Image (cartoon, rainbow over all chains, first blue to last red; front, side, top):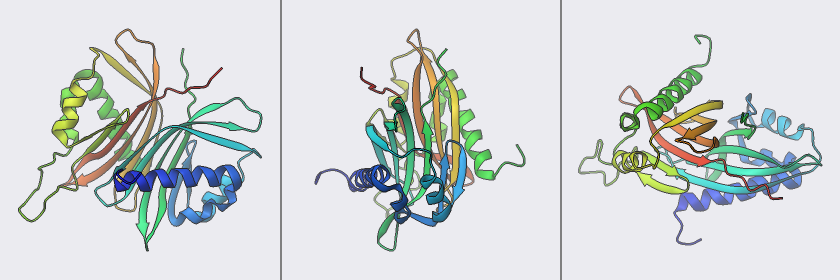
Length: 127
Length: 142
């Protein structure tokens, strides 16, 4: 861990923290967003900590588990971190589904917060 | 189109242009990336605008390294189809775009992919400072 670039360390720690909170008590995810944060969830847009947490809290499953297949992190020109996650999730007794999620993390007042969050289920129409 | 937010217009315009260039002549993608040496002066040791690409987990920085990678990809023909795309404004006036799609390279099977771009306006032009690509290879088990 010590020899990884700093953005990798911050990005992967965030990702671990995010999915841990999501899988245990997603009503606690408010702590990582700010009022300027944007979420796009399956194409639907939400802005601000309150609207985002309300959306996440109201998702229609009681149990969820995420497992991460791959994650990438990059520093951005404006000293943020861009993270992309490919993974799988299992909600209640539904079949396992793939998902894609991307985050921008920004350091505000010495804390890393998520300003941008995009989520999509990996539902492809392979014909 | 006119009533879409500006970041949607910029993001979807970029995405359309990017995959069109990729599928027809990917050498031309160079125009979209920022080189390591652009704007360097004696005072600055690094160009913080230089583009980064992570391709299937492998990192490349600067227009030259990115183009060497993209040009050396081992297929003759490729076609991308976009399943979904999302665009956000970021706190630093950039546009973040996430694309989910399918691609067909040569005679290989159709595969899913995920790609994320960060676009920044540099000298009145939208360029790609960050690019991450992964094939959607999931291991769903038995």
